[in-house]
Image 1 (cartoon, rainbow, N blue to C red):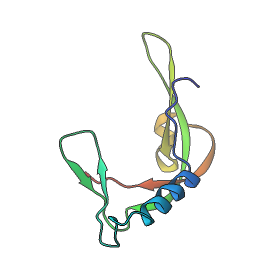
Image 2: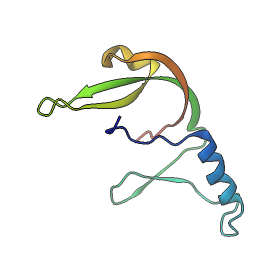
Image 3: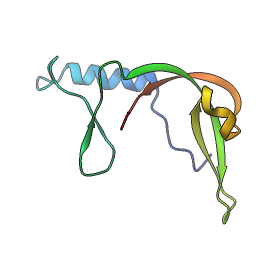
Length: 96
């Protein structure tokens, strides 16, 4: 799947958290933000991280006929013709 974006795994997230725990500049009061690529960064609210069920879906470029994968929460997969079994994923809710 050459067009697939690499998805962080829980193992990698744990490694990042372990690294942050060893950074003396990071304390229990350090704020967490999401960089959306725009001019500002977005706050991540407490309780915004959860586990959900998701399925993969595919989108085809009408010009090149290339297929690109994406993921959708299980409750929305009917709209996107998602396939396969639902899998448990970690979701950070960005409510902006």
